[in-house]
Image (cartoon, rainbow, N blue to C red; front, top):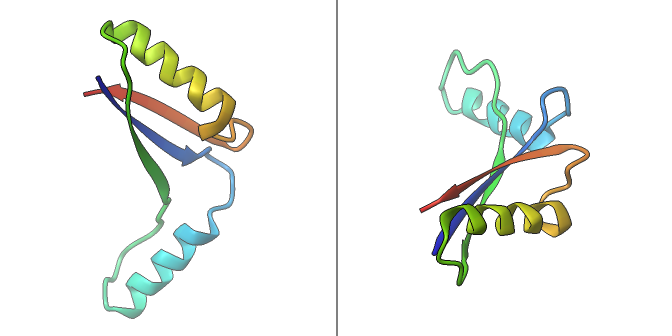
Length: 79
C-alpha cells in the first residue's frame, strides 16, 4: 500500500522559503502573487493491507519523525 504525506508549516509560522519564491515570481513578471507557502510531500510504501491501519501507522511515523508537529501540520492520503 502506498501513502502520501503532505507537510506544511502551520498558519502563523513564518515561511522564508515561501517568501523567497513569491519574490522570485514577482521578478519573473508574475504579478499579483500575494503569498506562497511551501511544504514537502513524502510517499511511503508500506506492507499494511488495511487502509485505516495504514493511515494510523503513517500518522505515527509523522508524529515520531517526519513532521515537526510544533510548527508543521500534516495530512495522510492512502493511494
